[in-house]
Amino acid sequence: MSRSEEEYRTFVGSRAASLHRTAYLLCGDWHLADDLVQETFVHILRHWRRVQQADNQNAYVNRILINEFKRHWRRYGRLPVHADTDHPEVAVPDVSDEVANRADLLRALLTLPARQRATVVLRYLEGMSERETAAVMRCSQGTVKSQTARALNTLGGCLKPKESPL
Image (cartoon, rainbow, N blue to C red; front, side):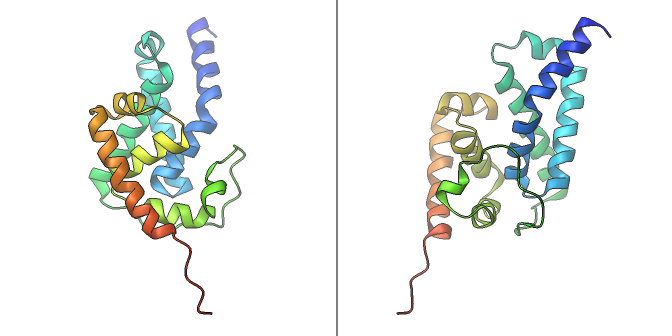
């Protein structure tokens, strides 16, 4: 095995769990998330030199994943708005438990348009700054701010605790 192949394998191994989590939060389906991540890995392999030369490899790879998600969204239209909760838990720490039940959060995320969903996932669940999110999504920081604000407004309405009838 060449040194380049070994570097690729090491990089992919270090990013796989995070990419799977991000893909799942974007689409809400483990099988589709696996497909999106596999397409991302293929793209990384084809363009490995570019990935290695990127100023921020993680942002570059997240951009590839977002592009795969958008490509799928354009090709097949809206994704189902239900969360399949019969799958095993992700073995990666998940901050969404602090905000709301995972299933409720996922259902709420899936009601958002693709661009708003991507900003929320990248900003709050992946911990990226506005600048990093804008770079990944290839838009301005102002767009990230406005899309995030709209998404949070929608999510706030979806995730508010229901009033007790008592």
